[in-house]
Image (cartoon, rainbow, N blue to C red; front, side, top):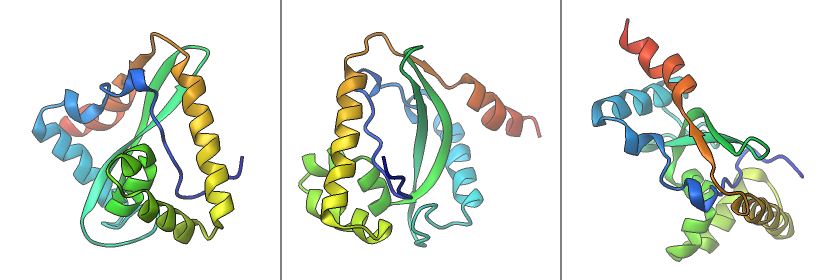
Length: 151
């Protein structure tokens, strides 16, 4: 599988509701997202665009342990964030725009885009066969939110 700087992150269906933003108080979420923007120098951590940023939760999936673990929160521009959540882009009728942005940012062909998307969809299908995922955000929160709250 070829590595791209802008990639798809298709979350297993069972894990959709297990996100950080929905579990935190608005003030805590603001602290986390603003910290991500500052770490990225107030530009998209993928393409370098300046302007309005969005916070994107990065997850690691351990299929053997059935574990979805939060590993970071990144600052992304809306176009990079849309590509990352490619399934949603297609659902809202922006698949073509997302494909063009993926190819532009990664300097790849349409064939390479489709190959990467197929791999992401296969990974998603495989992970969807796994039941009873556990979501772990605690370690990341302790190292990021709780530590900064004590300062």
